[in-house]
Amino acid sequence: IAGITQAPTSQILAAGRRMTLRCTQDMRHNAMYWYRQDLGLGLRLIHYSNTAGTTGKGEVPDGYSVSRANTDDFPLTLASAVPSQTSVYFCASSQGSGANVLTFGAGSRLTVL
Amino acid sequence: GQNIDQPTEMTATEGAIVQINCTYQTSGFNGLFWYQQHAGEAPTFLSYNVLDGLEEKGRFSSFLSRSKGYSYLLLKELQMKDSASYLCAAMDSNYQLIWGAGTKLIIKP
Image (cartoon, rainbow over all chains, first blue to last red; front, top):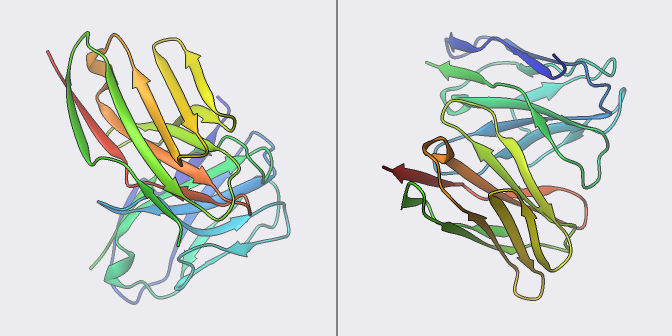
């Protein structure tokens, strides 16, 4: 089934630890995104990539890094996790970087203690 | 600044009609999206409007007024499975999405 796979589904992490959230899509979409979703707030863009080999900063990039070595994979890394990074993280993709429909992964729930 | 406003929560009765409003302020405008998100799941696309007017898609319709910075999502013949959060998102001149916090819709029998 075509779509986006995220891993892990859920993770509890000690503060200061490094963590990578994985995201893979099989739709050959050019653009990929990482959002965080917190209660009472809209989805906030962390980082994005319009095409393989390029990345850009979103609204809340501090403490996060991404890479886009190929079309399919877009991992998000927390170099040294802090409690404020406790959130649900969604990876998404779209055919292009303009006014395109986003397809979301199932999300990764991260708790930083 | 850029901003999206939508009600936090709404309650409606099974079989009825409900209208979820969304107002937006963005730097430029490249369209308005509605997504549905069931609890614990990913958002899924419902509709996209870039021109003024009503777009109908089965039981769901979406309306846009660019001059008023206003959109609504109309759900008819409500079913229990429509219980979800509905996310409004406006696209600015840089094609960045500005998201509302979502409207939680509760359907009662």
